[in-house]
Length: 108
Image (cartoon, rainbow, N blue to C red):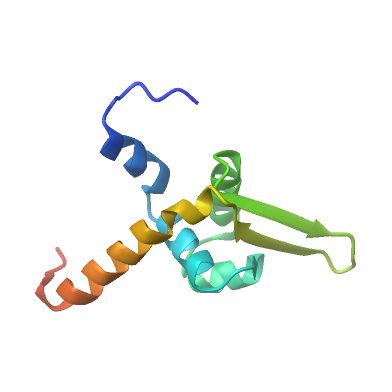
């Protein structure tokens, strides 16, 4: 994938940006592997369509792995890849910052 902007913060924001990707990664950091329904519960009110799209993007970037089991009903699990695990310190820092400054943040 081509990233025309050389700024490393822009690259990280592109990958973790949006409403759901960082929440999906955080859910997997806290409890992996997770099935689709568990990820949906961890990210309310995400729709199935959007969650599927975001999971495919994260999988395409090599951050998460999807394992489908040949059973009925279908069973699919998601987990962080070795590359995805490099995001753990970033997610921990974001969680720490959020916990520390939650009271000071005024939502618009």
